[in-house]
Image (cartoon, rainbow, N blue to C red; front, side, top):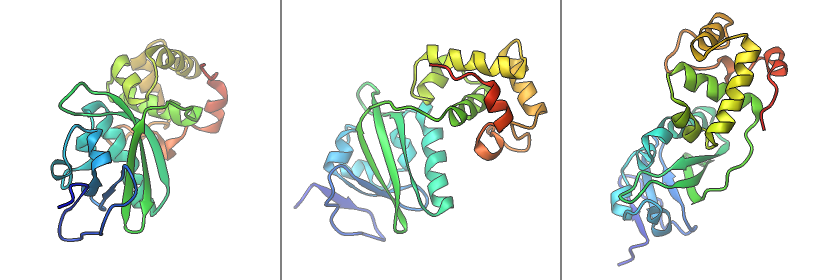
Amino acid sequence: MSTGHVAAPPEPRGNVTCPNIAFLDENLVVREANDEFVRYFAATAREVVGQPFAALFHPTSQRMIRFRCDQLVDGGGGRFTQGATIASRGPGRRVQVSVLSYRRLLAARVSTYAPGPVAAGEFHALLLEALAEGGELAGIAERLSCGQDVVGSHLDALMRAFGAGNRTALVARAYSAGVLDARVWPPRVRGRAMPGALRKRIAPAE
């Protein structure tokens, strides 16, 4: 009997022939996975299949993984690549997660973490949301896959742009300006991007 593939009923999809891949249903539950994929999580295919995909990752990464996957499901297509920390029996480690829309499913892969640039507008939006949620600098840096010094530099730029002297004032002014949507929780930047006029006032941090 092959141990390289386990499919969860009721919709087996046949052999997972691509290396290091798993398929998720519209509820973001792992429906198929092969051994190369599950080895990243120090688990077996039987332990991974049937689990929520986000549950495979550390709590600091779960919210972003769920959000990005939900975007693919709701948007009917596309892909994303995101740094994340694995929740495994061993020490948590960083990986790169790539998910794309595949027919009625999502196809997910994990690989060695290779940080890449994030668009400044999106980065500032994610940072502002994390601050509004009450996140600490270390946790925000983990979520955004960068160092605390980078987060601190971008935070200073945001506070200058909003004329805020501290984080509390920054969040309050972002809500007052309508940048953060007061109708939803967790906090969300309206339109998922910083307004153009404001973005021009935020000096990019290196």
